[in-house]
Image (tube, rainbow, N blue to C red):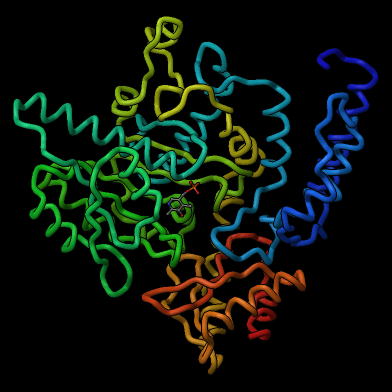
Length: 451
Ligand SMILES: *Cc1c(COP(=O)(O)O)cnc(C)c1O
């Protein structure tokens, strides 16, 4: 199984050939979920004592399993937050696997860690963070938020210990009532409380609500989370006004920009993100709007030492790694063994240059504005909010939840588009989440025509 045999050579060629075809195809259908019974019928016998051989296993994947997975990088995949990896990033993901790089420590993976850090430093600079900022690529935004908040609480605990004061009965996180569900999930894992604050009418969290929460829960709040691009609406909190409270109150400012922070690269959206430069930590998911494949979240600390103190694992067999001043990515989040998952972004950035990223992000912002305008022009449609970034939420007059469901199922059934119902304040709506550079205005107006 490990030797370079003729059989293994043929297997590698088969897999590379499939990957090449998939990466270079421009007509991969949207595909759709299949029932477990049907998959059972077609694929239940895959795992046997003797093995079915590479060509049969690959055929099963290509003809049965892959078509039962929605093509998330399809231009008409407009639900949730899509993904749209650049060719360079997807292709290089194969290289990362082929190279068996261990991305956890400098000792084992210095070259890869150096390149990942280059990408993180570039991002930190774009976000206005100091040159000393740094962090690590983790699996996703959920783990990025959790790791940042754990570092924030550790920092707060240390401050309280040093001052000789008593620890608060409960630690608390202040965030918008529209913050992502992963903040509540992190709080549950950490056994801390969330203080949800109502945002302004625009959907954006401002300092007035945060101030009231900080005053009410004085001494208990260790972190304020600002969302830089909410998942539902793409709304950016008023980070500058929240950051200004740091002069009066002692808290860690975490910016959850999993989806939206990428838009800071575009001059069109950059002003919305004023204040991000004051963050103590930020996250952004390259697998969302930075055109990298699943799964990668860039977690960046203003002071990486705070992350290292919270997360370094200690064990006798690890001492040789942790008792040096080398930069080991394992030390900056709740993980140990890790794939060097920042490398596809690094390779793609190096290949195409930052300018190509700014252009692609700007194009999505423009397209969102154009389709919002088109929605406003159509009498039976209603824009729920003006888009700030690239999520456009709208309602169809007179439609009940079941109408949206039927319409969404029909679009997917006809392999036309993947657009799912959503809701806000108890009203059903639907949304376009746009980030794929291959999505066009014609495709989107074509979808509106079906309503
Ligand atoms: C997607 C998202 C997350 C969670 O990221 P995952 O990579 O899915 O874990 C967190 N916050 C926001 C604002 C998001 O859009």
